[in-house]
Length: 283
Image (cartoon, rainbow, N blue to C red; front, side, top):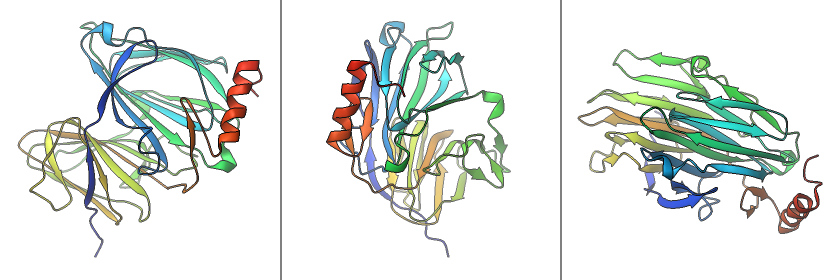
């Protein structure tokens, strides 16, 4: 009998201002570097007011991590020091491995009604891969498989595998799973997860329940972290219930975090910023 994962932590995030003046909600980040290992940060940026996001995230460096951007509404224009340029829109994913160092910018633009909604997730890299060559991958909405379950549930598979269908993001060190799950009112969905992996869900629409607990409904904008086990279970309340399901293999390594750069020691962090300041950051 597979153990169904239980809730051990519930977070709702806090409003912060990042970049050149982007108002967003930080679901978790600098204060919880070990709790969500191998993930470091999750930001939810959604607004109908361009002044909340239009100044964007001008040129800035990253090293030692991967940044994952997922868009639901609006679009984000990006450029980086590898020469990549492009725009991601609704349903698209940008998976960037900073590795030894990359400098990039991300500039949001709302849809015709000014609406912008997306997420950025940071995943840590192990010490052995911190200085790997940087790489950039972009996946359009059409490249991400969407499964329709018999009960009306719909699952978009960015990475990982659902019933034999794999997402397009592979060859990632932390063996991540990234699913966008929508359940019709009153339905439930179970999914096997790897024992020992960190698993959490972030609700982006409606209200529902996780695990076997029906006394603790979770709503839009709520993150739920689970204990260990082999099975994840979700149940929709009386409306559509949509959430992002994230999982990954913990690194269990020391974290030295300085803004957009995450290394293992303070000495490595100091070196990274010295190199950025003297022009030797890009390898």
